[in-house]
Image (cartoon, rainbow, N blue to C red; front, top):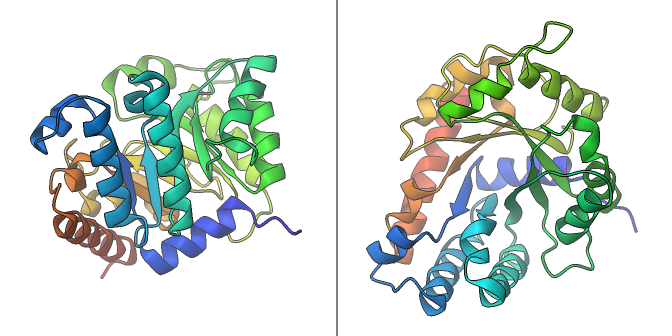
Length: 279
């Protein structure tokens, strides 16, 4: 069976459903805002509502693993079901786990999210490269084998990130640029784009790095963190066509009404399309 690369599947999803990623972030304050208790029942209701409202229409759903892990095995069971049902409805699932380790441990993380035999198998996963880009090799290789993707932290939207990401490597490049160059090498020759993406905050203004990695650029920070779709061309420049803006609270605050969730996601997707196309 021919494996279709994640980059190809993501490009198709962005073109047909709109270039938007919606986070599934069931933190306590949001559960409370929805009138739900911060317990496993509240988690199940919240997650089911988001999946049923959005999985058949948005390009990417991004569950934040930590908010499920905090409930132990019952929370992971909710996450497994959300992944399965989201993918069945046509959404690509990006597991926001930000894993990073070395050797066999990185291999185990990779198998958790990138092996089709795993109940948490996702279309892509976020990883941290700051143990050295080469430490990600088990995830990169397994993702390629199974047509999945890997999103690598490059320039994140949190202000603390700059002390590492903007630091200078031995050859004079910033560490962020060094990581981006590694990603570009992984994606070389891929068409329509590669399957190794970068995480670059939409709140950064001029990113000050070369983002032409021939891969997707996940852009957190739209909505509650202050960035808007109109900011994307200024941050991403000529690479803006590969941007997948990530919105969580900006959409989720319109729940628990499914219509409110759908309308908000559609508005964001339309605004992104307009910003990217210059219309």
